[in-house]
Length: 136
Ligand code: CMP
Image (cartoon, rainbow, N blue to C red; front, side, top):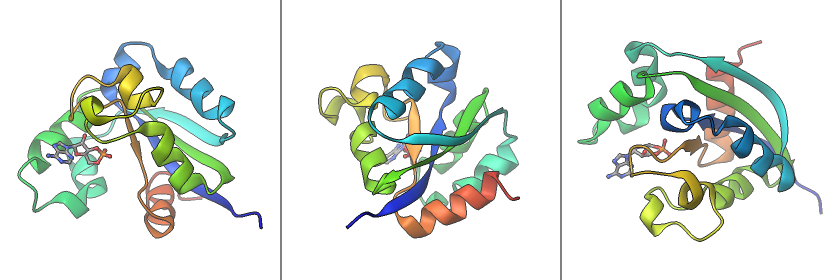
């Protein structure tokens, strides 16, 4: 049975800076995820801290928020069959060195921080994250 979902994807500053936006968007499109909405933004550290609030107890939280607000990012709503898990599979493991071949983080990621993309980890969080960036 078909299960069409939406998920949130972010192209992080390291990838935007290296002009990888089109390559990453094409990777999604070529793998059956449609880009319903896309915008380029530059978050403040306060906004990044709000977005990554679930990680606030983690030792890397401050660096993570500084990093996400360090440059332009692309936020996108992706739609497709099982989009949440499909997107996570296409991204690969959080740490690029552990990611499977032909995943975005393996192809483009630099480090666990500069891992090029973020994607929602559940349907529930996808709804929250989409609402965070695309309120209307
Ligand atoms: P992301 O999917 O955007 O979610 C949180 C981010 O924290 C993660 O990708 C990584 O880029 C970053 N991060 C930094 N250090 C760690 C760590 N030790 N474990 C998990 N995520 C980390």
